[in-house]
Length: 263
Image (cartoon, rainbow, N blue to C red; front, side, top):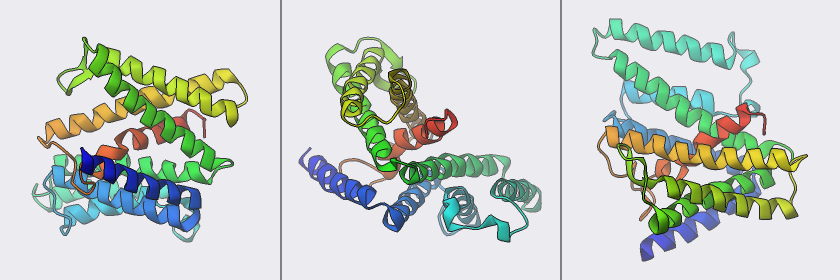
């Protein structure tokens, strides 16, 4: 527990400091976090980094991750999405060229993992670059962390009905509700001092979306770990597991709130 607290305080302070700095510092941190997260996913599938399969995964993820301001696709013959589609066709063709040493399952995992990590961290960086981006990111972090903490303590105190026992046996419906309640309390308090939206209805929808989708993101990563029979995604953060263990909710939330028009 002591190690967990120390790691949380030191890593959290450093993380918040770089978020405040923004710019190239934040972009560099996002690149590093996404790269480590992709490595963790590949390790679950027992794909080594220094292989063609590993390189393909990283390349696809980086293609989706890199901010628009850092790469000019007008210099190429294809848009980002078109280039990604071209690479997908190449991956599928490799199943034939390699005589199924590179399987359809390998190709599917590589694509899904790159989209999950790449887009998740891409929109995390994007959120920091918009108007009042720093406050948006801080609010999202508060909501995600409050939801996680509220679910943990409410689940321990009141939890009786399992939320998804086949994926995460300890999570309960009561815990999930507690997470939403604490997220609404902390989010409302923040927005009273730093209003970011035009109406309280939009604010409420935003807070509910972040809390509920964040909890879903946590379950998605739990499903990965259960499927591949691993306890933690990695050990880069002593006492906390891997990068995916800490950012699973956040990188699931970011593309959704972008698609819903909150960013």
